[in-house]
Amino acid sequence: MKKRNTCDLWFTLLILAGLLSPASLAGVEKKAQVGFRFLENPVSAAALGRGDNGVLGVTGADGVYANPSAIAWMPGKADVTLSKTVWIADMGYSSVSAALKGPLNMTVGVDYMSMDYGDFYGTRRAENDDGFVETGVFSPSAWVAGITLSQRVSDRFSYGLRIKYAYQDYGTAQVATAGKNLSDTALVIIDRDYNHGAPAMDIGTTYAFGFYGIRFGAVIQNFSQEIQIEREKFPMPFRVCFSADMDLMSLLAPDKVDEHTLRLGVESLHPRDFKERIKFGMEYTLHKSFFVRSGYLINYDERGLTAGIGIRTTLGKTHFVFDYGFQEFGNFKNVHAFSAGFGF
Image 1: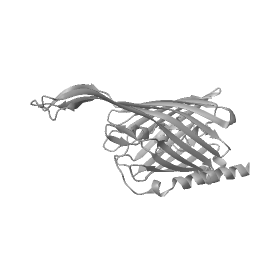
Image 2: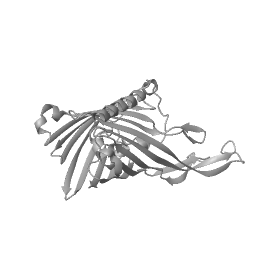
Image 3: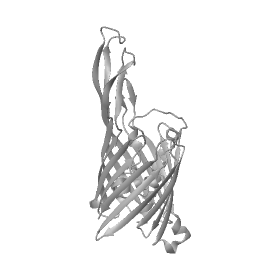
Image 4: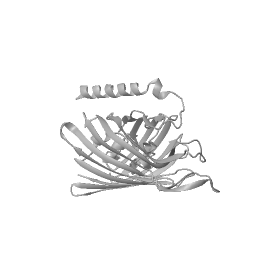
């Protein structure tokens, strides 16, 4: 067992060394270089409450959204989680995920998340007093569905792979296919649908060091080919995340760890189109049933403080979980996330 744990650690360090390449850490700031930005939105209310630290600590079925290796640490045999997030500007999104343990310490998960952008009023230019005419109401939408395979190869190490398909519908636009301007008699205007879907992949690992509750996680998200709409090409929001956390209670009061835990974590996020971002989070647990969370995000334009609570209860062999997460969003309205799930 000791030899295998040593191999697991070296494997994790090799992955970390590969991810910490000059390309991933280059200080080039490239804004507006990716699409399908909804894939970056936090899903788990528990993770959002502790500073959007989701790479470690979320062991329910909704853990696949931040780290596909997370579900390998699921305490029961099966888990189902539903989440709802009230986002900014009257937008929101919902998700459902499920995970089931199988042979060889393998865990399989499936997930689906849909984005609601609300209603928009379409217009196009016209030669009238207003300079435009209305083209009706349209409602952009987006969704992603995935399947995850994760394995806990030892009591300390797990890996996971999530294959997903993301789709975005921008609505219908009126496009001129002939003519030079609005007064051109040869002007031809047609309706054209703008929607596109493409596959993508997430890869994640988790390693528990076995003392003071110290853990490390590394994730590559949204690895995909470039997508082309009209003449422009862009990738999905590719990013690399590193995370570490520990249980401070095991260090400060080891005789109390059965009643209290106090996890402190930090995530380093390296997106394709922005500079490095840091996310701090803390979670206090009482009797493994009541959770209080808080966190802070650094190098974001609007986001900063987060907070949340959670409740876990057991009825027979089934456990039930409810989590709430809050995030301040600067000039926009605050974000509220809710998750509910059960497992056995």
